[in-house]
Image 1 (cartoon, helix red, strand yellow):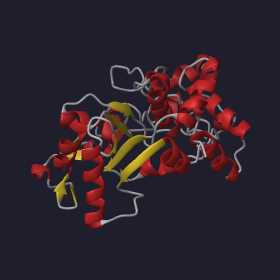
Image 2 (image 1 turned 120 degrees about the horizontal axis):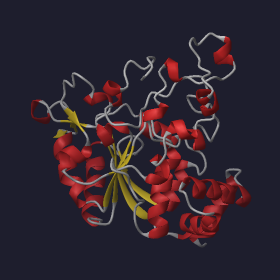
Image 3 (image 1 turned 45 degrees about the horizontal axis):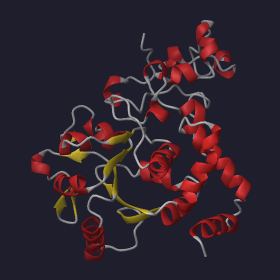
Length: 313
């Protein structure tokens, strides 16, 4: 059975038709900022590309980024992992433990040096000589310094691995740092607390389709996802321009969907595609649900954006 037929058969057994698959490819193509002419090519990349080895390391994190990715359903994450990429190691979902897990990590890195994608969620504690973060008897800082230079590329998923995130918030007792700060390597950053899974999928598909990772902004973020301010895409923007603001969550203005700027919305300072792709399969996103954006895809947002419910003006 060909790889393409096997993938489509697996999807159909889960209730996803070929038409649904092409519809997802269309949405993914649009998210990546490509013209509709690329839809068949994106589909072909998902169906036929050689399986790229991936090692996923969990550092100082809450598992929210992994949870958000595991909960994506188009495509189902097992289909993405088992048919499109080869997930050789993941601290959260792997079956092995102890020495068997360590062997899986060592074997994959050794066999695929220079060929595997390293995905990291979580920051790196550097305080107390790195002893604030230890996994399997090894310091996180030592693990990342050993493995990251051997990868084809390092993809940081979530704000913690991208910029330090919550662990690095003041007073930062563990002296947590981002992956790039610790390794000195240029990383592809997909920030968010948590990030939208489609931005991770789009980054991987960009590599499968073009043989390279997507163009990045000056903060290491893929431009297709982080090239515009939330404020410029927000469906409440017309209320901002008209001077119509929510001043209390339990108010008629809130029920009418007025602008949340005066409630602390950080959309004018935040780059992300939340209004376009939303979360939970395009169901909603914070502002649509009546909550101001807290700027979670920006560096140092825990300190820079706080207090979250105070206007930035």
